Every structure is written in structure tokens, then in C-alpha cells.
Image (tube, rainbow, N blue to C red):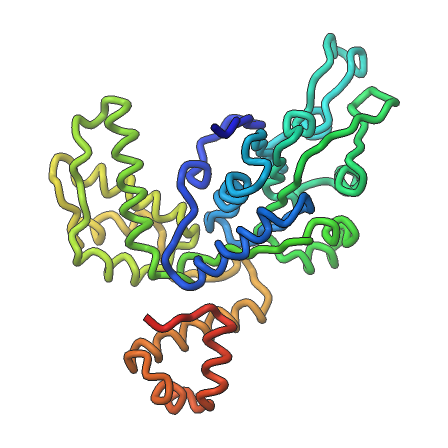
Length: 336
């Protein structure tokens, strides 16, 4: 059984769902995550847009790693005011009110995994302190002149463009370099629409179970009509899987005592979800990522249009079949 030690109270969708998917992109990501999980104790860097499932993937990696029997400790680097104290701990008398020793999150992650959510919010001084932890496993609790040692693995997550943050002076390049022994990018939902139906069904099941458990509903007998999927897949959710969860919560409330969710229900609640086709300035991206994402989407659409007749698709795209095969491998696109 996995021991859970949370560093702060929160209810997070990514902490509740099992990370899985049938799309080629997610299968490829899971294969890379398996390599990272079993590839020793070096740090792992997970990037991706808001709500895409970064913490969610971190939990999956922990459960797949040799440290799965140890604790999994999450630290929200943007939510903790006294981060030094809570991260490194303190000694008696180190400041007014410090009447006892406090074990920090680093020590709580002993023999397990520490996840730094939104690590880009760390101060430069905190980055320096953690740099030493990554290098030799040593840190100083607040108020102590004696070093402490810790045996844990570090996973860092961010939704920022790291190159831009380094250029702006918000992140130390040497610290980031220490974190990306394994680098994984969680794709946005619109990049793997094939997984939307299974995600919706899982979210529906879990939300219904919560409501039944709390006594709000007597039964969990609500399901999607098959005609719902084109309606949902046509939308672009700016907060990804988290946006789907908002949709499901509203649909459950809208359906009341009915047992089937229909397309008309989705149209009725979608305006309040703000799932408009807005792909930037909430999360600015480098041109390379935008270009690759758009190219992948278009190749998939052309291949579907031709029934995955790759010679015909190559003619439409005005590239050679060899180039198309190379693109399919590059983007993790497989023929059905």
C-alpha cells in the first residue's frame, strides 16, 4: 500500500485520477514515464499546460517506481508563504514561536518522492538550496548550522516556458539543468481528443461516487448518450482535463434525476464553462510547440479523411510517403 503524505490541504483532480489513455500520444508518454520511473533516482521534469495532468503523471511515476512503498509528498511552490520553513523544517529557538523542532517536507519524503508543483515559483535562493539537495542530498533546516541528509527523488512540474523564465532571470539555468535528466511533456487535451470519451466516463463515475458517498445522490446511474462525443470533442477546454471535470459537475447537476446525458444538456451548460477556442495568452507557447501541435493535428485529420491510406494522404499533403512515415513516427501517430 502506498503511503501518502500531503504537504498542504487540497483537493486536486490530478491526485484522484489514474493516468491512462489509448491515444498514441498518451501511450508514448506512458512508455517514456515508465523509463523515467525505473531509471534510477535522478530528477524528473514534467512540463505541460494548466490542468493537463502534470501532478497526475507524477503520481503515476511514483507508483511505477522502486520508491512506490515510500511517501509521495506534494509541495505547491506558489501556495506556501513560509516555504523555507515548511520545506526545510526548523530547529527549536530558530525564531520567535519555534518551541519545537519541525520536520520539513524534504524529510517527510525520506525514501520516497518529493514533487515540486510549479517549481518556477521558487525564489533564486530556494533554487540554490535545492540545487545542493539534488547534487549531494544535503540541506540545512532553518536555525541549524549542522547539515541534514535526505534520501528522496525529486520531480518538478511547471506550465511555463523554461527558456523564457531563464532569460528573464526567474530561474537559474544550472538548477533547471539538474532537474531535466528525464523530461516529459504532458500534452493538452486538444492534442489527444481520442481520449476525451474515456476521460469523461471516468470523471462521471468518480463524481457520482463522491455524491453517493456524501448522501447527495441515492444512485450513480447516469451515463452519456453516444451522440455526446462529437459535441464535446468539438470544444477546446482552456484548462484541459480540469475543464472536463467542470463540465461533468455541471452536467450531473443539470441532469437531476434523469439517467442519460444528451447533447442538449451539454449545449445548455457549456456557455458557463468558458471552453472557447482560446489557445494563447493564458499559456503563451514557443512557436515551435504551436507549429508542431498544429502540424500533428492536420496530419491526423488528413489521414482520417483518407482512411489512413498513407499514399493518398501524402499526395494531399504534397510530401513523399517516406516523409509522411517519418512525421507519423515523430508525432506518435499510429494507424488504427
